[in-house]
Structure formats: C-alpha cells, structure tokens
Length: 121
Image 1 (spheres, rainbow, N blue to C red):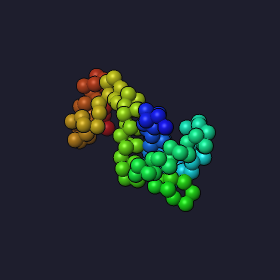
Image 2: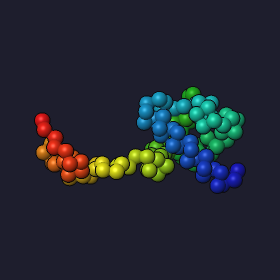
Image 3: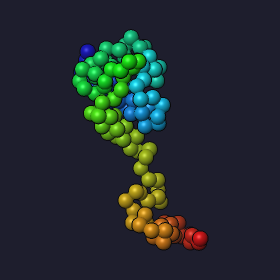
Image 4: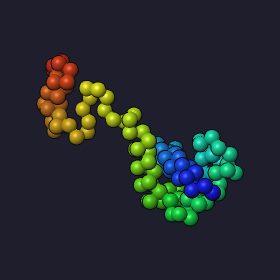
C-alpha cells in the first residue's frame, strides 16, 4: 500500500464514519456500506479497514466497524478541517464566541449593529 494513499483513504473513511455517527445513521457500518458511501469497490476498501483497525482507529464488531475514541477524535478533526469553509460564519454573521450570546438584550444589540435593523419583542 502506498502510504500517501493510506492517509487519503484513512481521512475519507474517518470523515464518513464520523458523519454517519454524528447523524445517527450508523454506529458500526459494514465494509459494504462504507464502500457504497465512498463510491469504491468493497474489495478495494477491505484491506484499508483492516489496517485502520490494526492502527487502533476502528474496532471490528459483529457486522462492521466502529470508531474507537482515537478514531472518533481523528474523524472529527479531519471533518472539521475539510468543511471549515462551509461552517464558518457568513459575511455579517457573528460566531459562537460573539459577545451577543450573553443575553437577549446583547443579541438584539448585535443584530442591530450588524444589520441596522432594530429587533423588538
């Protein structure tokens, strides 16, 4: 196995499994389910899944694979990196650390400053 290809496939598998786990679609997808999701032949993906299990990222279960804590952390990190541009605030939007989350009054003031519109309850 080419090590760069292993890293690429690892990131794709962990991202997919993290997403499936987070969306409660599957806690332990089968190799066939992952292969369909990633659009690769199951026979091609199987040795990679075994390698990731040997590396401690996946845990084989009765019908498939489950992320280990290490695999879950890695999947979360690579998912966040991959989709960072899609999840950051848009122009004119505040983020989760904005001071406006302290109270409803602060939220209204933030909205007014950003849009010029007054929010009245």
